[in-house]
Length: 106
Figure (cartoon, rainbow, N blue to C red):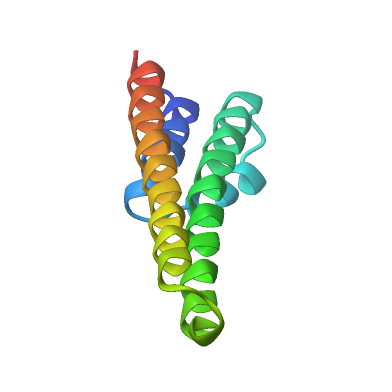
């Protein structure tokens, strides 16, 4: 297996062990366009997961700090929807990363 393919596999599978760091290192350290292309795609997907996670934590802290000004129903809808969106995005990007890893292997 060529080094470019191995670096691409590491970029996609890093969502499970070191998200966003490995694709960025591969992107900036590698001169091969194939590896850079896949590292950029992996970084975008992993940024979506991290961004949605940060938004769900923001919703959690809004509920904690502004609980007295919110109704209980609004707070629970906000929390469930924020963590629901995060879960869906994380699951979708994880499945996409697995599929792309398998495609690069072939």
